[in-house]
Image (cartoon, rainbow, N blue to C red):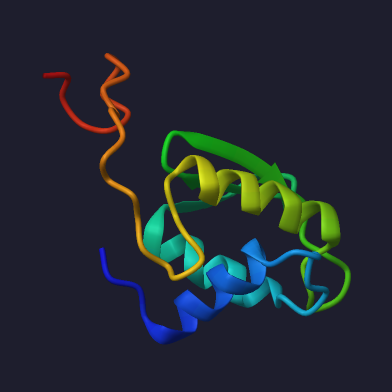
Length: 105
C-alpha cells in the first residue's frame, strides 16, 4: 500500500531517534486509519491495530502524542514491517495460521 506524503512524514517522525516530541495525535490517527484499524473504546480510550498487533491508548491531554505512545507506535510499525520511507517489507512470512494476515497457505 502506498502512503500519502503526510503519512510518510508521520512514519518518519515516529521512527526517528531520538523520539520526536511533535507528532500530533490527529496525524497518528490518520496514519493508523490508512494502514490499520482505529476503534473507540467505551471509556474514551482508542484501540489502534497495525498488522497483527493491537494496543489501547488514552488520548493525550494536548495535541501531541506522548513519548511512550510514540515508542509503542514505533514498535508496532516496525513489527508490521514499515520502514522510515513508509514502505512495507513484504518479504516476511506472515502465515500465523489464524487468519491475521489472510488465509494460511
